[in-house]
Amino acid sequence: MDGQSVKQIDRGIAGILVALLLFGVWHGVTGVAFNRDMLGARAEGPAVDEKLESDRFDRGYLPAIDDLFRRLAPDGNLFIHFDGIDPGKDGKQIYVFFMRAAYVLHPRKVYVAPPDAVLTDAESIISNNRLPDDDWLRLHGIHHVVTFFYEDGRIQRTARRVETVPQ
Image 1 (spheres, helix red, strand yellow):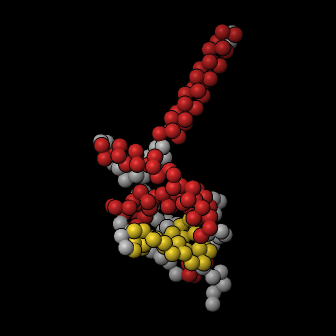
Image 2: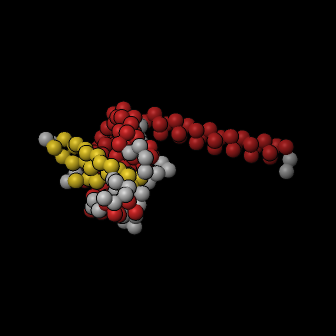
Image 3: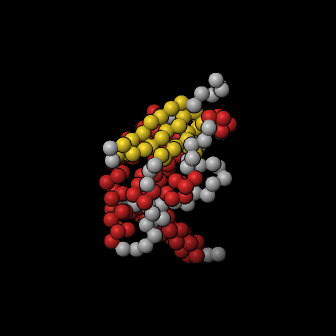
């Protein structure tokens, strides 16, 4: 391989790296933090664009959500229970809460369903989201349960610590 070929390969690799860097910057600036399926949008059009646009505003709340999960689950694994939450109306919040908790608490685990449940969207999370008994929670190293529910038309929460030794 001659020197000219090596230079062309180096320029090609550098071009790819620059393209990937620019894509990452664009992705961060536009605020498109979730793919369309995670937002519950399965089609193209103005409604999808509106959901993606609203995600830019929601990014301001992410540090508060992260801090909430750090405070509510300072140790052990976490189980999130969505009591009466409507996935059609609040599917985005379900995903944001679940994904942010998993991100913030890593390497600890965050459960919303049994480990063998297939979770593909907000509806599948809600359909598998049954609050297990304390024995199951202890078996999976879960120290905290956070429950989100509706009250006065708004999503509220409660939190409790799971006793690690049966009473």
